[in-house]
Image (cartoon, rainbow, N blue to C red):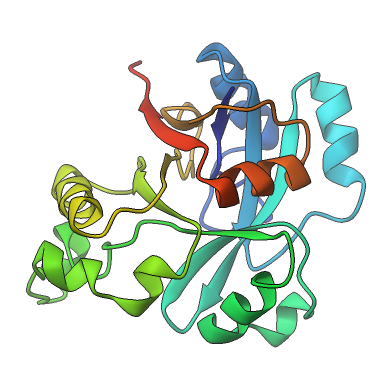
Amino acid sequence: MLIDLHAHTTPRSNCSSATLEELVESARSRGLDALCITEHDVRWPEGELEDASRLLKFPLIPGVELSTDVGHVLVFGPLERPLWLGYRFEQLVEEVSRTGTAIVLPHPVRSVAGARAKAAGHVEPSAAVVAGWEHWSLVHAIEAVSTQTVSSEHELTAAALILSPMPSVGASDAHGPGLAGAYATEFSGRVVDVEGLAAEIRAGHVSPVKFHG
């Protein structure tokens, strides 16, 4: 199965200009089997995403992109704390260690590599430094590629994955029309809901895929 794990809609993510319908159109055109909606620090109201999925005749899986003290983390599955309380990364790791929830590190080197980091005056770390970050090995998978990261970030992430192997995924991180599905994740098992998605990620049954056009 091919699933895009990371996409944002307007107006629920104020950084996105893509409607849910536009994201689904893009994902469907690339032959994807499902799309995860991962707004920033907010979930869709219960049942609303399921209703949209039925209306659009396309599988939509809920997630959330949480802000933590080590950066953003994609979360697939239930959380015990209200989102407005926030999470420290160590709290999140402790919680998911006893639940079936999966966590993925998106755009893992964006703050230290690529154009944004250079503009901020950051010196790009070595792959060994990245691979040695504590949070690198405490998630269930690393987002290796997305439309919101550049080739130098992809290369650094790939080098760190060689030094410290982890399951890796691809995701569009779509914030605009036409981007959903540009990168996706191939799942070796069949996924029909967020519980199954989380189980497959936690088991490492994932690999990144890039689509052209």
